[in-house]
Amino acid sequence: MRKALSLAVPILAVAMTLGCGESRQSSPAIAALTTRAQAPSAELSRAGNALEAKASDRSAAPSAPEVQGGAATHGADAAQQSIASSALATQAAARKLIRTGQLGIEVRDYAGAVKRAEALAERLGGYVADSQTTRGALDRRYGTLTVRVPADQFKATLAELRELGKVLSENITTQDVTKAYTDIETRLRVKHETAARLRDILRDRTARLSDVLEVERELTRVTEESEALEGERRFYDQQIALSSIAVNLSEPDAIVSASAFEPIRAALHNSLQVLSVSIAAMIAVVVFLAPWTLLGWLTWRLIRWLRARRRKPVAPPAA
Image (tube, rainbow, N blue to C red):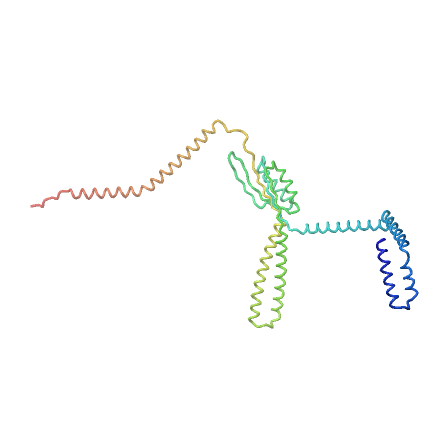
């Protein structure tokens, strides 16, 4: 502040002096300003010190309006944060997500677990899309169920499916198809606008016949592309609306060891297999050799008959 006053006084004095030199008939106001400009610098320094003291007092003790202004600024920041949070929530809600899951569960009763999974899907508004069952060694059953449920019931379905038995494996994936879905909607909008313009051209009927036919072909092409895009969008809608969970159910392995006669039973089973294979091979050999054996026997009989006929003596003619 002191430097500013010390620089302003000489400049103002020079300006006033130049103005007085150019016009000798100066007004009383200008003369007064010139007189004040030529005041001693000590008084200006004291005035500057007083101003600085007042400024320091204000900075040390903020006034009530400043406090109110700070509170208002804080409230504005809170409002902006609230708006940003709501915008993020809206953006998250607009995302297109396809959720899929896979569970491996060990159950004691396979049939009962399958029934419980089907009832669970129906109760939550879904269904069992696919079911496969296999019976293994020692009558052990295992299989896979594909459960489709609404997307908002995905977590609840997983929680209840875990209660079917012992969870052996779990895998959950989420695919964000927002960009692809938005691209399809944009392309559909452009196709619909193009089709509307082409229909307007056809309604006028002012063009030549060749031009009308060209417009009709173009309209057909645009309509086919629009239907294909509609199919893609419906597919995405179904995948987004219904989440898919693949449930691999399996019964536990047998705890009781095999009996002492199990090796004998296995040996007899293998022996029967070997015997059946041998019999099948013999039948194949017989079927293969039978016609050739018959042909060889007939050939041998024919040769013997011809030899016997040659050796037979010719009777002399009667006298």
